[in-house]
Structures are given as structure tokens and as C-alpha cells.
Amino acid sequence: MTYVSNSDYTTCIFTDKNVENREKDFRKVCEIFVEKDLQTNRLLVTHITKEDLDKFEERLIDYTFNKLKFYCRISSFYDKAYKTGFDDMRILEGDKGYGK
Image (cartoon, rainbow, N blue to C red; front, side):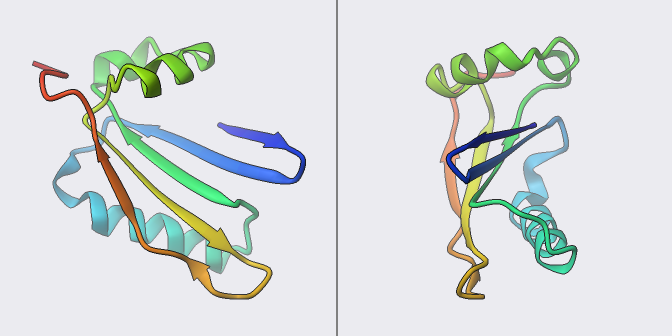
């Protein structure tokens, strides 16, 4: 899903993939953006349960983020204009009881 506002692109990806390799997987996604010359200012990858992903609706994105209803969210800013690529990866842990 992508939201666009005043040339400020944020790409939100929701996945039920295992979080064990989250940093490695996130770097692979970043590489795809660079190699394919894709547009975004910020990339967010949020890990949620398969059950939540199956019933996920776009209108629940803010609720998911505000209530920390996820395992973790990884983000990075991308500076394509100055060719500096993605900056440091930031990991936000979700609710400790989520998915149990």
C-alpha cells in the first residue's frame, strides 16, 4: 500500500513472514527499491500475524500503528535525490503480548 501526499511517499508493507531474519529481509527490500529505481521517501515493513493479515483492511493501518498491534515495524528513510540511499534501519517493537 502506498500513500501519497505533497510528494511525500511512504510505502507500507504488511507481512506475516517470520521476524527472525527481519533485518536481512528489510535490506533486501531496500535493495529492490534502489535497483528498480522505485520512488519512496520512507519504507515501513510491519510484521503481523497471519490471522490479522488475512482480515486486514486499509482503514486499520492507523489503529495497528497506534495500538502497537504488531510484532515489530522496521523503517528507513530513502534519499534518492542526493543518491545517499536508505539511512539507518529503525526497529519499533510492538505489544509484547501480541500474537499470543
